[in-house]
Amino acid sequence: SKEDLVSPYVGETEVKTKEVIEKALGGVLFVDEAYMLAGNTNPQGNDYGKIALEIIMRAMENERGNLVVVFAGYENDIEKLLDTNEGLRSRFSQKFRFEDYSPKELAKIAHIMIQAEGFETNDVVKEMEELMSNQYKSNQMSGNARTVRKMVAEIVSNHKIRMVEKNGSFYKI
Image (cartoon, rainbow, N blue to C red; front, side, top):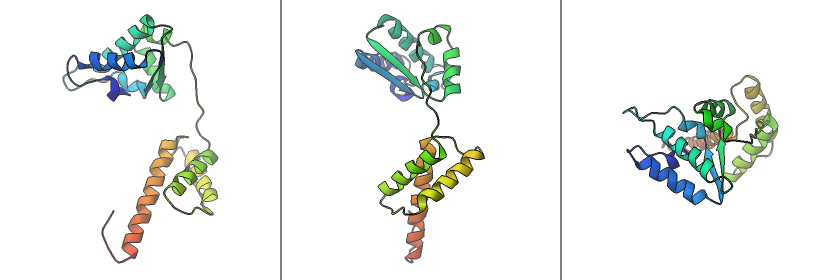
């Protein structure tokens, strides 16, 4: 991620990025949300993400055969990233697109997450699938498990609040 590669201090981005690349040699450098490296400047106007990208591009060329680089992120954002530098796009020979989860798959993920929190989920799966399907159709939800994780966290939090209030205590957890 950007945090692993970029430093807010002059000269440290080069060091951090080179260290991460060095560790990845002979394997894979996986940059999640890689699009965060493009076009971000700090308050002083320095674009340290661009510096990290340039170092990665050099390593992709110089360590060809010894380093695989994977940029992960939302398709449109990755396309914009690849457009920021003419040489960047040409260095990626493969592109993999993963389809969004379906509402049914999202409901299964929610079911597993809710069970992991210690809750019984007898008849909830069908209701969750309907909820996911309705939100998906109205563009309130993408096929993204992160959205489900947030929803489950809210469900658990609301349950805890109700339990505390029901037991006569008004402490909010």
